[in-house]
Image 1 (tube, helix red, strand yellow):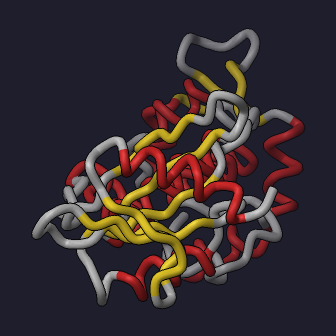
Image 2 (cartoon, one colour):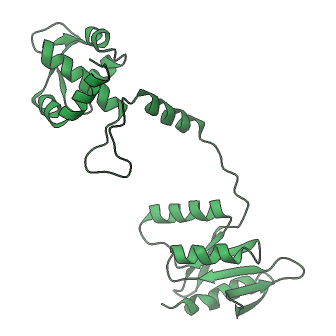
Image 3 (tube, helix red, strand yellow):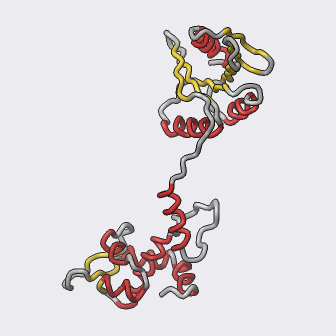
Length: 231
């Protein structure tokens, strides 16, 4: 496929709406004019890419009606979603062009000013995680091992207590460690570190072999928690 293979379907699509369309006008792949309206500018590419986005942004100096035209996104729906989100933020339109007979042009997005919607719940979660996390255990941009979240830090504090004191009630662990959600962490056991201690009253938890291994794996984090005054 070549970029100019996309031009005939796009031209026919716009002409059906009353536009006079011409290709390669100035630096624009296609330009449609209808009456006294702002010109519609189309940039064609055989795949969605950053250079295509750069071209679209440059054309916005000529018109508010700039579209990017590419073949349909294949399989990876996440890529289509990301492309739509980027175009929406930049005020660009997005078309897909299917060449298989008959050719089909689909408008995924029309150009419009971007009005960001604040995600207050997500912002709240972000701030709570920042507040609860002890120290700065993760290097920004690094993903060598699992991220050290505030939740994982709290789980490690519970695990340390169980290693030192043996099977213990969740309420006792919460008081001793200051981890208010200790009971929820032990019950959920997302990491496989905790288990109901056998032959003990309900609500008493012990440490699994996987939990003991985690304390060794995250020994540096455990030491950092202690340095910061966390049991």
